[in-house]
Length: 130
Image (cartoon, rainbow, N blue to C red):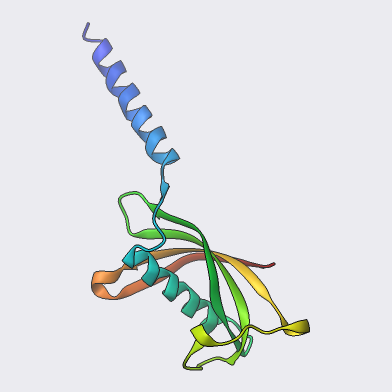
């Protein structure tokens, strides 16, 4: 009987590890305050690091996920290049470029949010033109 206890504990630990690994990121609502702030931060970082002189604005949020037990968000953002130059005041109202200058990207970001300290950090990002 005693040899069964370690076996049972081992199976429980293994099962828990597999379950949490499988559920590392879970879907969340796109309107959660900390997620919205993380999206805004990611777009700002993208524009700040982008060598182009025109700014991009958010068109759509695709995937919205949060890593369990953390404030690390995983997001797919669709953005379009605007006619406005960087550091323009009203980027959200800025029209998208048309014709040959038109450009859209899909970016995947992982953002570590510490909103109670007003700290956000992009952990990983990849972008492709669409």
